[in-house]
Image (cartoon, rainbow, N blue to C red; front, side):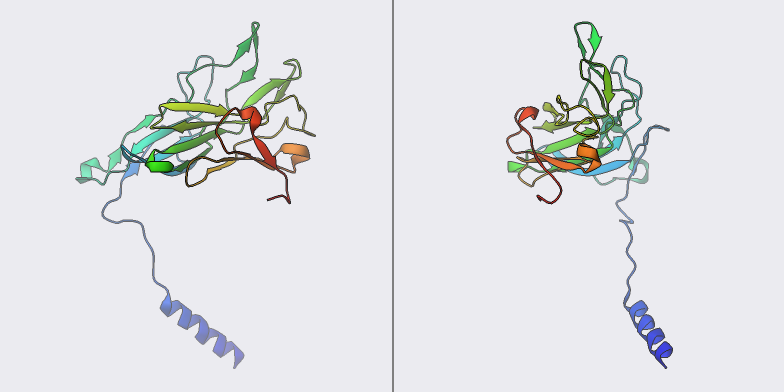
Length: 234
């Protein structure tokens, strides 16, 4: 008897279920190059100029000198199609970082090849719909301790005002080298911006013996002033 009642309940639930599907009329296709992991991360973006879809491609090639498959983020139109021929959209690469590896006194300071830039993309409308975007490269390598160690500290870039202002935030690029401190942060595997676009959050999963932490910046000033929250503090 119990089995019969259970079957009836399941049948009743099934009768109440309604299928959900994507937009069958206004759909579009965004397609990137092969072997770039195009679509690894996706975010909706809007500002005073319009609306777009942001797509991360962590293994995309860029024009950065000396950088091999550093990754990229693309901006794709979100306008509805006017015909079947316009459903396939071309996307433009956003120039978050156009420089090669950083050098000091003739010695390399970091390595952007294979950094997986675009593995994380998030956006916020910001105040007055000005638009704020954060895109991260969690596998970015920093040459710490007199440039002798290669450590995946990770880094992020924040774009504001229609991508006209871009700043870098790398909260674990400090003197705290080693996996027991900040050397293996991999900052940027997770990131977010609040609704007003004035507070940034960057997850650093490998910090402090891989306990992880969340870095937060409220003024979008120097990355050196970024505070942090340890597990149990949020």
